[in-house]
Amino acid sequence: MRWLVLLLVACKTPVPAAAPSIARSPISLTYLGVAGWQIESTGKTILVDPYFSRPNLDGPIVSDDAAIAKHAPKSADAIVIGHSHVDHLLDAPSVAKRTGAVIIGTDSTARVARAAGVPADKVIPVKGGEDYAFAGYSIRIIPGLHSALDHKTVFGKPTTVVPPVKFEDWEEGGALNYLVRVGGHEVFVQSSANFIEREVEGLRPDIAIVATGLREEIHDYTCRLMRALGQPRIVLVTHFDNWRGPPVDEPPSEDLTKFIAEVAACSPGTRVIVPKHFVANPF
Image (cartoon, rainbow, N blue to C red; front, side, top):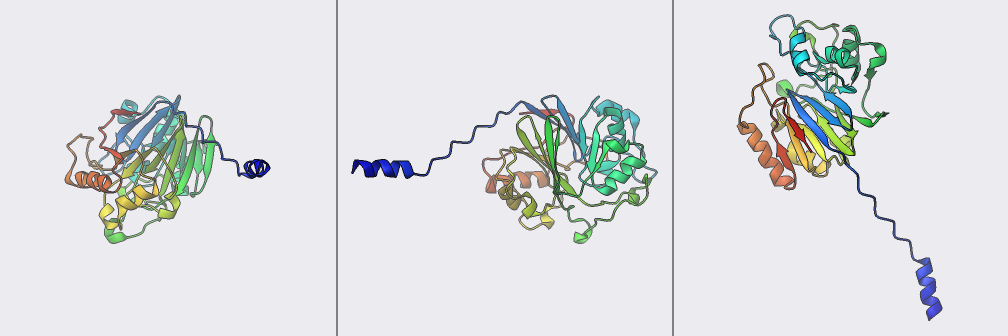
């Protein structure tokens, strides 16, 4: 019998070693207003939709150099753009030239950036599906959808006037989401309140930046997103302020309060943070 026991032990399928725990460095996320963010870790800075100018949208639309100088970092590694609307893209070319960052976005975004004088080698046009490695960080580009504007009209039309000068010239040009990996963290970035479930299912970010406006137009938006992302430990809300006016910190609106309750109901372990403008959120 002893030989039989030894044989069974020898033939037993080996138990795989436990996956090593992820070493995470400190990370800081600063809300820049509208859908803008500054992500910093391990000496790397990734910007999301930096929009500081907030011009009068009824007239010619140009960047405000003083606002950019006041709020943009001195240097950055990359700028990711969710789509080509004015409140996401207007200031990105100026910020790129000031900081030395590369701009990553749709072909529409890339054409605007190049027309605004960003060197071609600092512009990376993407379609979604790419997963690019850089020095000290990586970015997965995820096909996305814009929120359901104007009775669920689907846009996707590229910006055709370069550089755009009027509000209506800034077309969506397609929407993208991003997974930014830096300092051992995975940060999911969604600049507009819509998503393609199959494209985000299985992602496991520890931090998610989530747009909330017009989510009521999308079926079971909050719970589907939390489930697809594996119930991330931190959700930072974005694109919730008055993007047509100056940045002002106000108590959470009724809509944000409802969103926080939705997350609590379907992802009770998730902490929702309503950020303040230009205040770092360290983790």
